[in-house]
Length: 151
Length: 151
DNA sequence: TCCCAAATAAGATAGAATCCTATTTACGAA
DNA sequence: TTCGTAAATAGGATTCTATCTTATTTGGGA
Ligand SMILES: [Mn+2]
Ligand SMILES: [Mn+2]
Ligand SMILES: [Zn+2]
Ligand SMILES: [Zn+2]
Image 1 (tube, each protein chain N blue to C red):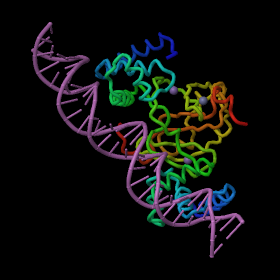
Image 2 (image 1 turned 90 degrees about the vertical axis):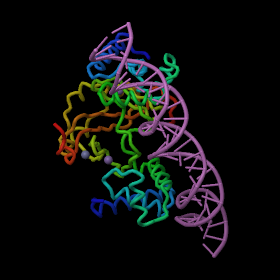
Image 3 (image 1 turned 90 degrees about the horizontal axis):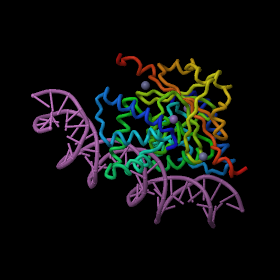
Image 4 (image 1 turned 60 degrees about the horizontal axis):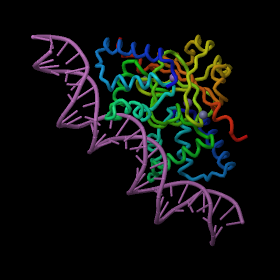
């Protein structure tokens, strides 16, 4: 809620534009859900957004927040922070390494990179506090899922 | 299950060693749970590990898998793949950027890095298929959580 | 203004992860 | 080896997030 008003307004304008283009109805619920997210730098969860939107639309249901955010994510208007939110998955490889994650089948493959091995914590990240680890996640289509993919 | 036997045996030996050192009891359940994970490159979930271990210990409960993996993760003997697994969190910032995630309070902060901006997909990752995006996650203690931290 | 597919509200449901507790067990000490 | 005890387990109960179902409402084109 600390974003400059003009940034939020720009996002709102782009949002309305994109919804018209994509034939997504501009319900007040949808607009207020997006506004709450677009006004935040906190990467909020559904409950947090619900608390905000309920001030303007007291009867809005959590399901509407979920439904809209999922829809907007599918249309590339918002994104989900972090990795695909499935069940917990574990790793016995405790050496430093990175992951290639297939966005279709969910398979996770390890890799190391001589280049990246020596990359220090970015100064921009260090400004936020004390980094302790770094993990690169490359998302894409694995070889198996790549063949037989549309277009 | 395609890992060389000697790799698995080395991991088992290190595991027993670490458990003795940390005074973690070497129960059959714990040993077999670790063995199942240490024998896999698939970053398996609890259900998958349960299926494997049940062949040797038919009465083992899923709770025992969860409990042991959580314990072992706290002791740094295994790790959890991907980012902290809490509820879904959303992002209206659709530009390319990375995240600093505080391991204590869970706060997520955006940053960009001129260096990283121009890093191509690592060849090692490209070998697995067709990469589409890349995201760096720096974990650490944010400034607020850093002060007043033990040691 | 009318129409209807899209969207919503509210409760039901599903599913992952954790909790509870009686029972069993690993392992240090005698 | 045996014993005592704190740690660990099994299995059912519980919690909690996210999705689904369905009756009702509504945005927006005609
Ligand atoms: Mn890995
Ligand atoms: Mn972000
Ligand atoms: Zn795949
Ligand atoms: Zn913090």
